[in-house]
Structure formats: structure tokens, C-alpha cells
Image 1 (cartoon, rainbow, N blue to C red):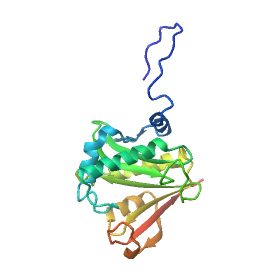
Image 2 (spheres, rainbow, N blue to C red; image 1 turned 60 degrees about the vertical axis):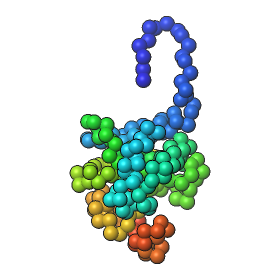
Image 3 (cartoon, rainbow, N blue to C red; image 1 turned 135 degrees about the vertical axis):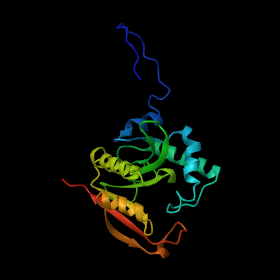
Length: 213
């Protein structure tokens, strides 16, 4: 926020966020705008809406976890905030709120990462990143997921200089597969139900999209 300047020299008050992890994360990941959406980093005040999303059986059907309790949602959000705060331009794990531009309503969550525990590097090769997303079922079928994912892919390619973006999806999740394929992603790995590490017992696919140029 900027304030009017009377033109005279004066000391600048020290901001509580100056040089803080929260400030660093905010500078790394400024909000992204699309035609209908605003993507911003998740905040501590998002707890209630995050729980509505992460506790909904339809929203979590094809996530790596079952519906959360209120305590689990709070713990999950705190973990996301810590990872975002620890992220650097080189090694990041960022969790964004998907909000409607016209109302500010939080309707989903999208994540982008190249490591699981920033600022330490992860197993992904240099130039690679992953994304994941979930929308509240009340907002399914309106193209919001595709719009959010497209904005995030563009950010990864242009702002983080990613060459390849990966996304994992359970094989029966046809809407998510259509979303990725509509953005140009193609399948490059298959995993059997026996290989599922999250207890869902479903086969899964890894999609990839390579930057052109």
C-alpha cells in the first residue's frame, strides 16, 4: 500500500513484514489474475473455507487424502503456510487460493512446487515443477479449474522458468484428465493401484507439459 508523500524527508517506519518469511513469499508469488479469477497465496484467515473444501467427500474423492476433520484442515493449512514462507525462487512449494475476481469468494486451491520441503531441493530435475488443484463441487463444470490451471502453468513457464510441468491424477478422474489434456498435457507414466501410496487403491497417471521455445 502506498501513502501520499508530502515531499519532505522522514523516516520510514519498519514494517512488521519487512524481511519476514511472509513478505518474501508474497514477493515471490504475487497474485495472478485471469478473466474471472484471482489466485493468491493461502492465508491463515482461510481456515474455515479450507475446511469446507478439504472435508467435502466429493472434493476429496480423487485427492490423496480422505475428508479432513477440522483439526486436520487447520494442520494442513499451517503446513502450506510454512512451506510457502520457506520457499525461494529456486526451491518452492506454494499453495494458492482460487478466488472469484468479482466477489473474492474462495472456491478452490491450486498448488505449484518443485520440492516438498523448501528451501531444500527436491527430487524433481532442474527446470521441472508440479501442480495440483481442487475446486469445491459447487463450482464444478464452469471452467474455473481450467482457467486456474492455465494461469499457473503460464506462471511456472514465465516466472519460474520451468521447462516441464507435471500433474498427477487418478485414472477414474475423467474431468481432471480432460482439463489437463485440454491444456496440452499428455500422459507419460502409468501407476497401478498397487503402487498407490495414499490408500485410495486406484491407478493413477502422470501428465506432463513441455514448454515450447
